[in-house]
Image 1 (cartoon, one colour):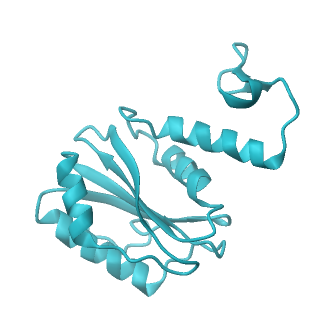
Image 2 (cartoon, helix red, strand yellow; image 1 turned 45 degrees about the horizontal axis):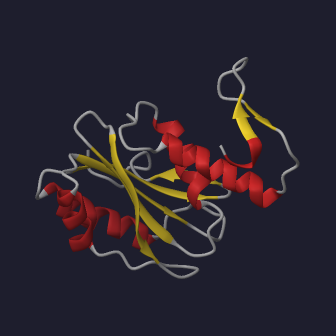
Length: 167
């Protein structure tokens, strides 16, 4: 692990940092840990852990990023990819590109995620509409859309839990 951090054998999930670190270093370490939790082959068995890792990766971005977790039939991660990058308040998302990438990875399911740089995770009408368009496009090729998470520094909103997605 970078910055002299080593896993402590005494307490699982804790790390010993052997030198002084600043806030930027700490964020880098947090991002490294989040990426490990989203590594290829890891099964998504606890959606709250996935939400935390995704929030860590995206909450501090100064522009919108639209990403996906591509999963196999057992919900093991095939890939985490940031497909679209936008501006401070929006990102253009192209369903054709999402379907193309999901098929290339042979994904059976996926989770959509994007950030709100404003810090507020409340989904917009555009967020709801693109979710429904993507879910429809992906269902045509038998790929399940498990959820769409909107992440921000003030929390995470699941569009599935809000009832904006088909079951």
